[in-house]
Image (tube, rainbow, N blue to C red; front, side):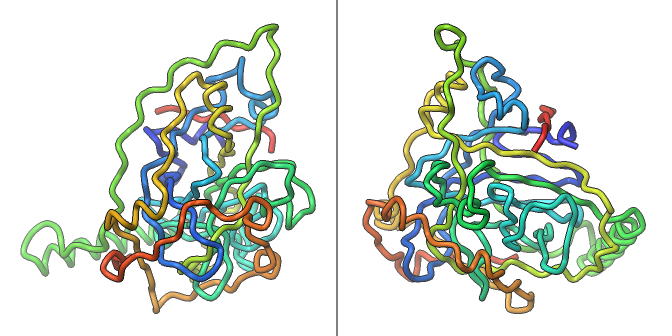
Length: 349
């Protein structure tokens, strides 16, 4: 399945017209509930298979891609899809939606996936009542990751993505409905195209091609990596939408999957030979500059309740402490309302 996943700039392209971007953002305080933080660019992505001499053997065995992350920053996932798709999101092979162990199959009871393009993004693990807890990277071995707290061990780390497409009949019916709506728009507006829809997310600039791998360490040894997993950070307002389709609408087997390894910035530099990305601006400076935060709410959609396992996950600040940068709440005017060819190898995971 993994050979159907490709990197395009700093985005992953999965089967079914699904695109996933890993967005850098600010780590929120772990008390209170906050609006969506701003995006401050994409994380760079590199194929693990491009660095056979420096990437850890277990990463090479699992395939996929890697990205570097600072502990002071957080991550959100931006989604787009040209047709309906079901996307499973795992954190250390724990479902970020249901809190259950990773599965190769879709489930609606409890739901273990997000529905695209209905779900435009996911900023963290589902904590219910229209909120999530922010994705924050922490080293494996502390027990602070979602994986460690839910399963009692930290083996996998990283992020896992798997996409399932509509069945052939359902996809054909959906396309016919899209053609009907497009024809209606042309008629209503006297020409091609209709009224603009929800504001699209701006596509980030493509990253430069990845250089070759870094030189092999002296003696040919590959050091143990500082592998990272995702823990729970601050709480923010965001719905995880319930699927309104029948389980039988989706294909029996997924179309593609990818393992996303998280690494520290020094390890990234050692493995890839590339300089570390710049440190993100702290949240106080961002707010002081008057840059926007975001609020998103859809009262017509049904939000998934928080599973008990994820509801009990403790924030990473219990292990690492709060972010050292001071919290400056955004002014009301800064909170903006929003509406709705490189193949990646797969491996054993």
